[in-house]
Length: 163
Image (cartoon, rainbow, N blue to C red):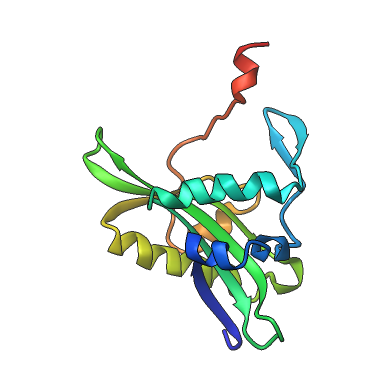
């Protein structure tokens, strides 16, 4: 897609531009876990240390799509992922954790570009599988890119076990 570039953001970039993630105007502010809406704090001073720790391990990645034709390379989409070594299956697995594309850029190929870049990076990292937990309605998008539905994902908040 003309004018869109995919970049990997690392801890060095975050050190130089700690304000970078504030440019993600499209992060969802309501996260639904076990049916209860939860507000995601906009306190970036709390988010950045978590992101830096994740990046230090080397198995966490953040890819951003930028509009290279804008004045400041505006971020228009992102995805983050983890790579783990699975001892049960004796292989490396990549987990696509979150993906968002800013609404004006949806259905223009940005999500496809992000996922294709992830596939390249996962292959270079020696991953044999990529797992995605997709929200409602996103299955068709991932199936179009070659993914197939295998299992059902369940989640619980840690605090749910102690209430």
